[in-house]
Amino acid sequence: MIRPRVHHRQWGVRARVTCAAAGVLAIIMTFGALALVALVHQSLIVNLDASALTRARDVSALMINAATQSTLPTPVDGNSVVQVVNATNVVTSASANVLGEPPILSRNPSAIRDTFVTVQTLPIGSESQPFRVAIHPAALPGGPGWIYVATSLAQVDTATSTLSWTLAAAVPILIAIVALTIRSAVGRSLKPIESIRRQAAGIGSDSIQRVPVPESRDEVSRLAVTVNHMLDRLEASALKQKRFIGDASHELRSPLATLRAQVDVALNPLTESDALATLRSVQVQAVRMSSLIEDLLFLAHTDEGRERHDLEMVDLDEIVIEEFHRVEALGRVAVRLVGLQAVRTVGRRRDLARLVRNIGDNAVRHARSTVSISLSEVGGDAVIMIANDGTPIPAGDRRRIFDRFTRLDPARARSAATGDSGSGLGLAIASEIAASHGGQITTETPDSFDGAVFIVTLPKDVLE
Image 1 (spheres, rainbow, N blue to C red):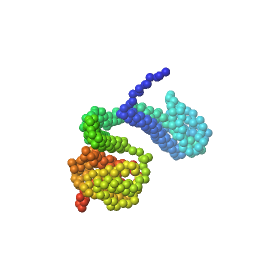
Image 2: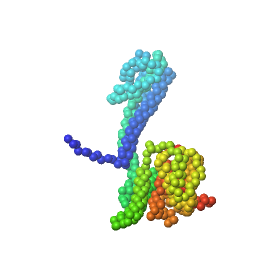
Image 3: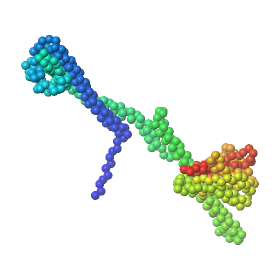
Image 4: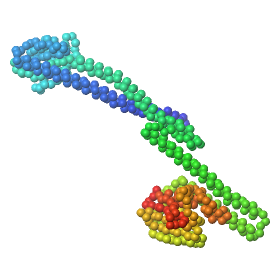
C-alpha cells in the first residue's frame, strides 16, 4: 500500500528563533522564580529564628535576675508564645496566651544548645497553625531548663504565597513581552534578507540587476555585497561564454566556407595538378579545424577543473630542450638556447609541454629572424623565458593578448591561406595552463631588446 506523502509546514526563521528564545527564557525564569521564592522563604525563616532566639535570651535573663514568674508577658504581636520548662519537661512559666497548655514539645531536646523546630499544631485561642519554635537552654532557679519561643509562620506563608502568585502572573507576561520583542527584532533583521531574496528571485536574463545593499555594516550587508560579487562573476562568465561561442562560430565558419568552396571546385572537371592543389588546400583547412576543435575542447576541460590525481614530477629542462629542437627543425627562424638549468616541478607534463609549445609557436610566428629560449630557477620558482625579435607588444595590450580569440593588428593576424597562425587561442591556453599550475605568464619589451619576451613563472611546490 502506498502511503500519501504528508507535507509538514516548516516554521520560518523568525518563528523558530522566537520559540527557542521564549522556551529558554521560560525555563530560566521558572527556575529563577522558584529559587527566588525559596530564598525569600528561607530569609524570612532566618529572620524569624533570630527574633525568637533574642526573645528567648531575654526571658532567660529575666529568669536569672528575678524571681520565677508563672505568667510571662505576652508578645505584642500576638503571634508568638513563650514557655519555660524544667528538666522534667514541666511548664513552670508561660505567656498568657498559652497559660495552662501542655509543653510545646513532648520531651526535652537531647542537645544542650540553641535549636529550631517547626510544630504543625499549636493552638492559640481557637486556631491551629504551624509555628516555628526557638529552643534555648537556660539555668532556672530550680535547675537546668529550656525556654521555648514559638512564632506563627502565617506571615511567612502569606508573604511567600503572595510572592509566588505575583511571580506566576508576572513571568508569563515578561516571557510574552520578550518573545514579542525578539520576534519584532528578528523580523527587522530578516527584512533586508527578504528584500535580497525577492530581488534575486526576480533576476532573470537581465543580469545588470543587483540586490540592494543595506546601509548597516553587518552580516546582512556583507551577504548582499557577496551576492552582488557573485552576480558580477556570473555576468562576466556569461559574457565571456557568449563571446567565446561567437568567436568559435566565426573561426569555424571560415574554414568550413573554404572547404565548401574547395569541394565545389573539386566537383568540376579538374586537371591532376588542380585536384592535387585542391586536396592540399582541403587538408590545410581540415588540420586548421582539427586544431581549433582540440583547443576548444581543452579550454572546456580547463573550465571544468582538474583533479590532483594526474599530477607528477616534471623535468622542465627536458621540455625546454624538446621545444628548442622542435623550433630548430621548423627552419623558419634561428633559435638560441641562452640558458638552461635542471629544474623540476609538480604538474602535468603534457599540459606544460603544450604551454611551452604554444608560446614557442607564437614567437616563431612573429619573429623576424631569431627566437631565444632559457630556463632558470629564481627564488625557488622555475622561470621560462621565450623571446622573439619581432614587433614589440604595446603596453596596453600585454594583458589582453591572453584573452581568447585576441588578435592585435594585421601584422599579427593569421594567414588564412597558409594557416601560419593559430586561432587566437594559443596564448589563452598557455595562460590557463600556467594558472592551473599556480603560475603566471607575463610579457615585456626590455629597453635593450627589440621584440617581445614571454616570461613563464611556475612554483616548484605541489599545487592545487
